[in-house]
Image (tube, rainbow, N blue to C red; front, side, top):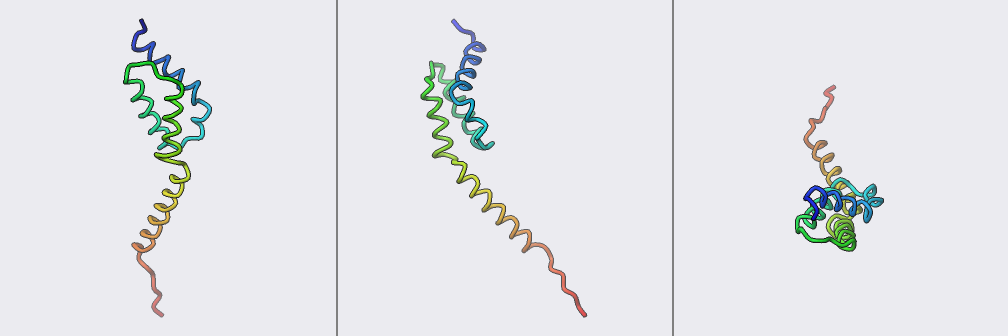
Amino acid sequence: MQTEQQRRQAFVEQVRQVIGPRLKELSQRQEDLLDAAVSDLFRENRPVSDEEILGQLELVTDFVSPLGQEKLQKAYWDLRLNNSETEASPTTRSNN
């Protein structure tokens, strides 16, 4: 019987083998969401298939937080914040 630490290490290695190369392509938000999803799988205390791990990756990257949506959302908020800063800064008028 495996100890908790051995089971965790085996699971981490399984995740690396299944989705390791694709981890470089993830945004920080996607990494956080994927970490939470695979942690939930681990906590179920049962064998987890490679397909389940890959399924969690696909859910995060295709449906929950697609990279294109994240970029669009960031651009929107950057633009909105820049506009609000411009509106809030005092205008200078020269009185001749």
